[in-house]
Image 1: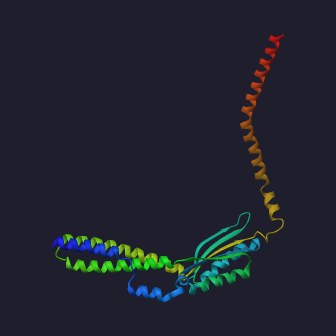
Image 2: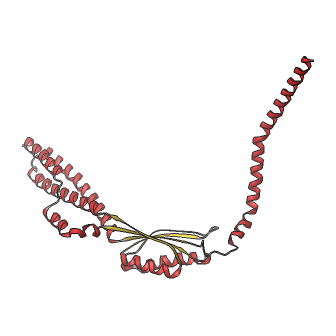
Image 3: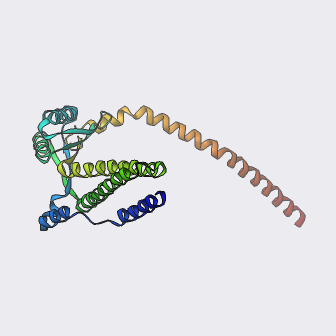
Length: 260
C-alpha cells in the first residue's frame, strides 16, 4: 500500500509540473478578447511639473493632497509626499487612483499652476497577468488532486504526512500567486500620477541675489579655510624646494672654484 501511494504521489507531481496550459475557459476568454487584449492590460503612469510663486508652493502642495482625500470614490491614495522650503522651495507628490480620479487631479493642478512639462507612459502587463492566471489554475488543479490523494491515504501515516507537506507548500504558492495577480490587476485598474511643484520661472528677480548675500559669510569663511588648507600642503614642498636650491647653489660654487 505504501509503495502504491508513493508511486501515485510521484506520478501526480510529474503531471502537475508538466501541466502549463491554461484551462479551457481561460483560453476561451483570452481568444475572445481578440486585438483588445493588450490594451486592456496597460498600466498608465503620468508625470506633471508645475511652476508657481514661491509662497504658493506649499499651498498648492496641501491642496493637491486635499483633492486626493476628497476623491474617495476614485480610491485615490497618496503614495509619497515631500516638501522642501530651502533656498528653492519645491515639492513632489505621488498618487494612485482610478483613471477618472487621476484626470480630475491633473485638471485641478493645471488651473492652479503653470504646467512646464507633462508626460504619460504605459506598461503592457498582458503577458504577466495571463502567465499568473495559468500558474494559479495549474496549482489549484494540483491542490485538488492532492486533496483527493489525501483521502485515499488516510490509513497510511507516512503517505499522509508527505501529502500534507506537499499540500502546505502548494497552498503557500497559491497565496503568493494570488497576491501577485491582485497587484498586477491593481496596476491596470488604477493609474499613477507623479507631481513636481517648483518656483524656478516665477521666483522674484532679487531672490538669487538674496541667496548669494545670505551665503556670503559662509562662502567667505570657506574660502579662508581653503587657503589655509592649501598652505598646509604647500609649505613642506616650498621648504624642500628652498633646501634643494641651496644645495644646488652650493655645488655650483664649488664647481666654479675647482675650475679656477
